[in-house]
Each structure stands twice: as C-alpha cells, then as structure tokens.
Amino acid sequence: MFTYSKQIPVVATPDVLVCGGGLAGIGAAVAAARGGAKTMLVERLGFAGGFFTAIIGSAFDGFVDERTGAPVVGGIVFEMLERMGVIQPGQGSQLRYNVNGDLSFVEMHPERVIPRCDPERFKRAADEILREAGVEILFHSQVSDVVSRDGRVETVLVSNKAGLVAIQPRIVIDCTGDGDIAAWGGAPVEKAEPLQPMSLHFRIAYLQPSFDLRRRCAAVLQAAQARGEIGLYGGPYPATFSGRDVYFNATRYPGDSTDPLDWTAAEIQGRKDAWTMYELWKAELPEFAEAYFMTSGPTAGARESRRIVGDYVLTGDDVAEGRRYDDVVVLGSWRLDRHPPKESGYHHIPWTPPYDIPYRTLLPRTLENLLVAGRCHSATSEALASSRVTATAMGMGQAAGTAAALAVQGKRMPREIDIAQLQERIAAAGGILTAPEAGDVAVGDPRW
Ligand SMILES: Cc1cc2nc3c(=O)[nH]c(=O)nc-3n(C[C@H](O)[C@H](O)[C@H](O)COP(=O)(O)OP(=O)(O)OC[C@H]3O[C@@H](n4cnc5c(N)ncnc54)[C@H](O)[C@@H]3O)c2cc1C
Image 1 (cartoon, rainbow, N blue to C red):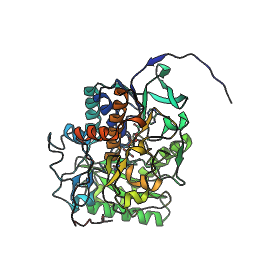
Image 2: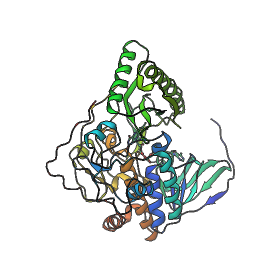
Image 3: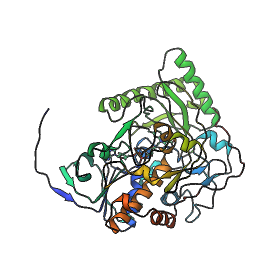
Image 4: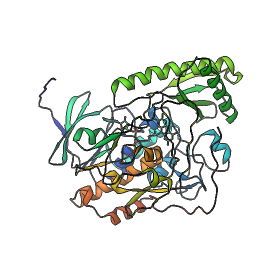
C-alpha cells in the first residue's frame, strides 16, 4: 500500500453536483438547474450522452408503450427530440412512435415516428440544453474519489488537466452508470454474477440498411463461428441514422467495466472482432461491395456494472407485471433485455407493460445527500435488464434533479422532501407518471 497526502484546492461549492453526463446526468443537471439550484456537471469524456453517444449510437428504448406507440417518458426526452429535429416543438405527446430504431421494429410499424438520435446531433443538443439551463459543465474531468463523513458525501475529488481538485456540494447526484460515487462514498452496492457483456459498436459506410441485410449478415456469422473463424458475438443488430450507412451492435465481451483490465480487453477484442466480421461480410455479401469501415467506438460500452441498494429495490416481477407505486417518478417500458454473456446470436427479450419506477430506487441506503439515477439505480439485475435503457435513464435523471432542487430550496435532504410536490413538479415539466391506456392491442415479437 502507498499513503499519499496533499493539499488540493476546493474549486467549487455548488448546490448540486451531477457526476456523469450520460442520459441520466443530462436529465439530472438540466432539471436541478431549472429548479433554481446552482448546478455543476462533471463528465470524464469531452461530450455528454454517456454510452448513447460514446458507443456511436443506440436506439431510444424505454420511450414508448410498445402496444400503441404512446410515449411513457416525456419532459426532457421530448425536448431532446425537438432539438434534434426528430419532432416539432409541442408535438411530443401527440405522436405515436416506433419502439426503437431496430430494423425489424421499424418494418413492423412503418407508420410510426422513429425516435432516431444521431449521436452528433445528440451531442450538440446536449451542449445546448445544459448551457441554456445554466449548468456549469466540466468535461474531461473524472471523479476519482469521494470523502464522506457522518452519512453525507462531503467532498468529491476530481482529476483533470488542472490536476486533482476538490468539489464540495450540498447534494450529489451519481449518474456515473457504475455507481462510482455511491461505492467510493461507502453506500452499499451490488454486482450481478455474471454481468451482461460489453460491446464495441462499429459503423460501416456505403451500405444500404434493410431487414434482409441483417438476416444475411447473421447467416455469415453463424457459419463463420461453426468453422471456428469467430468467437462470441451478439445479434448482429444493424441500425442506421442516414440510410446510407449502418452501425452494428455485434461484438460481445464478457467482463466488468469497473475492472480496468477487463475494459481494456473489451476494447482490443472488440476491435479485432469488428474487423473480422467486416472482412467476412465484405468477402461474402455483394451488398458490401462499396462498403467502408468508417469508425468504431469511441469506446466499448458497459450495459451493467454496480447497482446501488436503495430504499426500494425494483424487481423483475415489478417490471413484468407493470406494478404501480405511490412514489412513482418515471415509467419504464422496455423489454426484459438481458444480453447473455456467454452465448452468441439473438436472445429472447420478453415484452413488459409500462411499470412505475419508485423514487425510493434513487435513494441509496446510508448516504443522506446522495441521489442515484440511471443504470446504477436500485434494481435487481433482472429488473435492470429493462430499466437500464436510454429514455428511462433520462427520465430518472430528470426526477433526481427535480428532487435535488426541491431539497436545496427547502433546506432538506432528498429523503425528506414531499413526494406529492416532487410528482407535481415532474408532471408540470412534461414528465409522464400515469401509464397510457393500451386496450387489447397485441405486441409482436421482433423477427430474428
Ligand atoms: C453496447 C451498448 C448498447 C446499448 N444499446 C442500447 C439501445 O439500443 N437502446 C437503449 O435504449 N439503450 C442501449 N444501451 C443502454 C444505454 O446506452 C445506457 O445504459 C443508458 O443510456 C444509461 O445511461 P446512464 O446515463 O445511466 O449511464 P451511462 O450511459 O453509462 O453514462 C454514464 C456517464 O458517466 C460518465 N462517468 C462514468 N464514470 C465517471 C466518473 N468517475 N467521473 C466522471 N464521469 C464519469 C461516463 O463517461 C458517462 O458519460 C446500450 C448500452 C451499451 C453499452
């Protein structure tokens, strides 16, 4: 062991410090700042969006009730879609949407709007919404440690190009996806054994997306695996932003993103596998005649790592049965989508009705001034297979930020605020807290 001691500057004392600028972090920071709290956001990358933007892109899951296409998350999610030009201002709740940008869903519901989020448009929209809300942003700044005293986070240590600096906030919102603040601050956390696999997405230019292309890419991978030419892979799940290029969610690396060696291995193996797949397709499929390997990453992404243990732990049954709770702060709706870490190809993703996510799942046990939102909230690994996704994370973030601002305003701790007042504020800001009527509309299974 090595002991290190040093005096470092306290560079900020915000009302609310949001750690991590993924979907949850954007929602949290914007809502806290709009609620009147002096808000700072620290993010280790040079842009916001988390794995939504840092893995090239993904679908906007958790956004709709699959039966009817009615939205189940509103507020800042609608605003982001407006800012990216996907919908017109004020249209959010009027429209019916495709469940995600996956080609099989798109072909099932061609009449619905696709909530497609080009990562570059998303990054710009995130910069704008954060700055307009008055959030002080620190990019390229990684939280490295946490000092907690008497059941409260007192100091958050951040490393960036200024060296090591300290931030002393009144309230912290952990949106790191990995529960870094909760874990390093001493709150209880859990990790599934095994975790869902990590994936490195890659984008191929000059390629026409279609459902048939997907089927043919899958057949090539199956045959290559049988010949021993490729190891573990997922899907493949192709999707597109432009209609002239395709990004593939197809590499799969089992490991723990909070272990630096595992994450390094996921990057290296991911790149190797991505190129192997591309070269196989290029050699065997005429659609790839003009295709060009444009980019991978920027990073391999983690679907699951630490989960906090909160005042309530959301369960798989809560999700599967669409249970209601008095302290609902956002609705979830995505399927139970647990990527298997040791199997290749497509996996079964059981449908779920919209379900309530209680405020208590954002409150970690033992630390009073900490809220947690996004894929590290309090849920079993089974439930997280649904609640981890993008729109749900952003809605949770909006709820946590609204709660933090209320706590600051009332000089209380997040556990002490009035839940009815919190729900009123979320609804007044466009949040959806009541599941839409769905009647007897049946859902289809994705075709793969
Ligand atoms: C490969 C892959 C494919 C996916 N596909 C889909 C999909 O198709 N549809 C869908 O809806 N969802 C998908 N997801 C899930 C989705 O991207 C995220 O789980 C969801 O956006 C959760 O958001 P979050 O904000 O909670 O966490 P994250 O996206 O993980 O964001 C956390 C943020 O915190 C930052 N951070 C972490 N640690 C620190 C630190 N110590 N200090 C400072 N900053 C830190 C990170 O850089 C990041 O910006 C996918 C995820 C992966 C990995």
